[in-house]
Amino acid sequence: MARERLRYFEAMAIYCEAIAMVEEYQQAVSVANLGGIRDVQGLYPQLGLKNSPQVYETLEHRLVVAEAAQRLRLPLISKDGEIHEEEIEKWSILSRSSLDSTSTSITISSSSNSTNYTNSSANITAERASSALSIGPDTSEPEVGGVPNRFLGITPAYLWQTQLQQTPLSMDMTDYQMSLSREIESRLKAKCDKLADVFVMDDIDSSSRSQNSSARLPERVKLIIEEIEREEAALREDLYSADRKFAEYYNVLEQILGVLIKLVKDLKLQHQHKYDELQKTWLCKRCETMSAKLRVLEHILLLETYTQDSIPALHKIRKYLLEATEEASIAYNKAVTRLREYQGVDPHFDTIARQYHEIVKKLENMQWTIHQVEMDLKRLPDHPST
Image 1: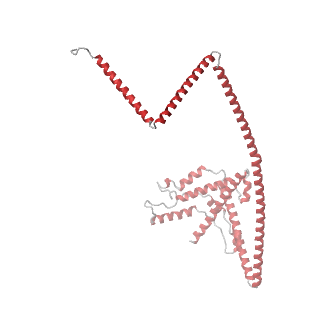
Image 2: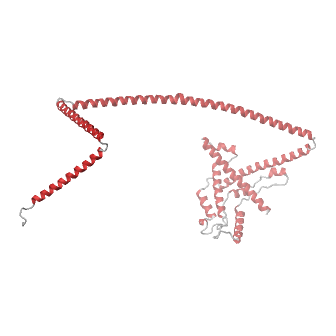
Image 3: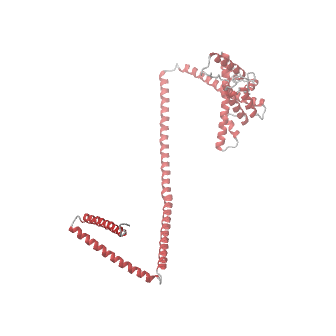
């Protein structure tokens, strides 16, 4: 159990370093794209990268394919929505065998002594590193996770075969594995060195604490008070500097706002006033032009209407219209006067006049009927025998 746990931690450390390398490479590419930098490899030393871009792209692709292939090895849920005990046991055995066949076999040799651990904790053998970083499929288990009609019938071996055929390496596989193993070894060694330094510093601090424990309590309290006072003074200075910066920024913002207001009032609105003035002048000229056109049309109409031949006829028409207007006005005045007289005599004049009009209509109808009967009687023959 301890051996398996150690192997798991070793594989996890290598996997984390590989992921970190890919992320740092992607970060360098994004920084180069945003900054317009053509020499992407110039950013590699800042991020701790040492290989060519093709190595990192190939590593990223192989990690993606390895994760997909490992997902295909996960236990399948049965039709009733549960995983039975025998299936769990079977898949656990298969997962252990796949882990034993495809996991990394890089070992980090370490001793119990901290000094020896610092010097030899990151020693990784080249052969095991190359076999682990190749991340190849397990050909001894072609059917693991590839049950027919499950996961679309895709097996890890088929996935590895198709993906590796699509992206062939232009460099030698041995060189690729060695370059990756050397870089991962250097990264792990640097981290182990830092960890060992931390342990050494902890030992030094513990020894110094044991020596200082014999010091007198007032001196320790005095030191703590002085440290707190220094921190308080530093915080107060930071607060004052922040206030000064805020005042400076506020003044700058006021100046910027004043410039913007001046630009809007003096420049933009000035141009707007000029534009409005030009628009008003153009509209006035256009109105004057339309008025002149209407006057011209009026004169043309008058010229075409009042000719030497039409003037006498127009005078006669005017005379006739004036006479007809006078007669109509006289008749209207008479009717109005008579109506007022009738209304003054009897307030029910309208009703009487309406009844009179109806009676006159009835009389006319009766006269017409009598006339028709008389005509029919006249058409009858004189002799009754006929």
